[in-house]
Amino acid sequence: TLGGFDTHYTELSRHDDLMGYLDSAVSAFYQDLAAHHMADKVLIATWSEFGRRPKENASGGTDHGAAAPLLLIGDPVKGGLYGAEPSLTKLDDTGNLEHAVDFRSVYQEILSGHLGADAATILGASFDRVPFLASPVAV
Image 1 (cartoon, rainbow, N blue to C red):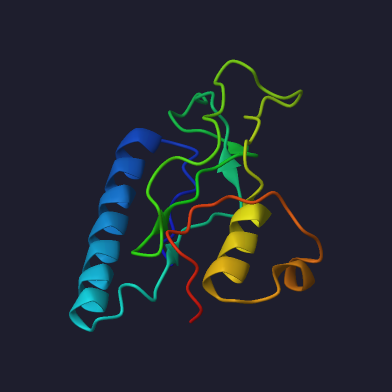
Image 2: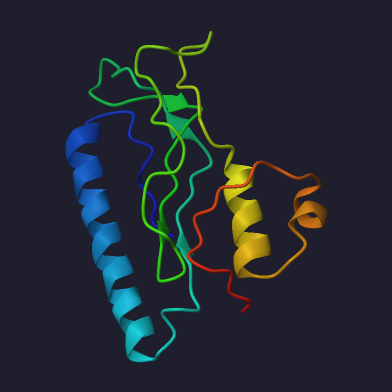
């Protein structure tokens, strides 16, 4: 895990540093997977328990919000942007971005398409499909 993304202040410089750390760590991990011929078996996913609001606060940061990006990395993933980019001007009644993809849809795709599990049983419901897997892989 990599903490420190709760950027209520000086977000620009802190976020830039954090993304650099994430890039270095994921790159090293992926290179190790490739060296051991395992890169096609592993899907790396990032997640946060909260998003950020689009409007900067008085401290040069952003407060907790409802929408956030999920990064999916690895050979099993078809690269691209899935879902519409949220509007920075059309916010919900509480000032949050309106998300385009429910994070449970992403989990469902990982569980069923990558791990071969019964996602509906694990998640307690079925969600819209997000077809980001290059080809289903049972690990």
